[in-house]
Length: 248
Image (cartoon, rainbow, N blue to C red; front, side):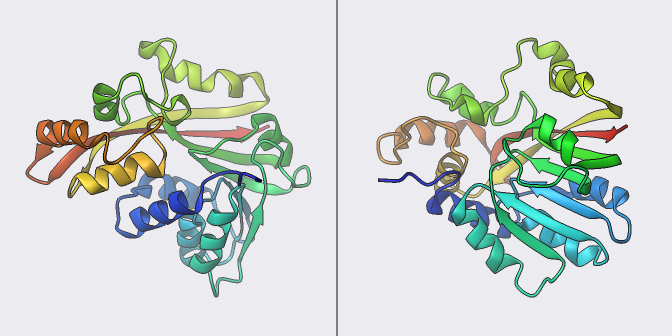
């Protein structure tokens, strides 16, 4: 049996559902991207998922051209549905670690929580082009880590070698390439979930845990819900950074 690459149909469905319910909050990220866009700019989103980022950009800045790339066929199918009628968007199924684009093809490369090759990002950027990355901070989903410390999917978290100087760790590789004007800012907030079902959707969507089973892990989820329920809902920490750099 051939195992599909990237997110499964269930993960894609849960992610699309979460975004459309307003749980995804990339507003700062979108504002930073919009600040770099110019008429006729060519932008590629590596790991575009359901295309929610480029769909918003394409509606707000119609004079630019947008490409969305994702390795998951399920995600690309949802992205096509979400971008119907937008003629300034092209969708490509491909691997962020082996980018199927020409050198110096794009003015802006963006990435949000997806695997990518930094060397390839540099290759496909035009001179003076921008790379903007939205990545996980070390405190993200710390409530999940607290209750399932030995079951975390390491690829879905950021465990820095030096928690105090984690930003230096993030920027280490990009400093080795010919990028300039490197900036990194982090943001922390609470995401609120209505009930335990939404918490379990979150765990399965990413996924956050190894061998997660809704029935078997129900009691532990109840404990988490009891401890972190606030007036607005069940509070889960969201910590992310936005990195910006320009190619020399």
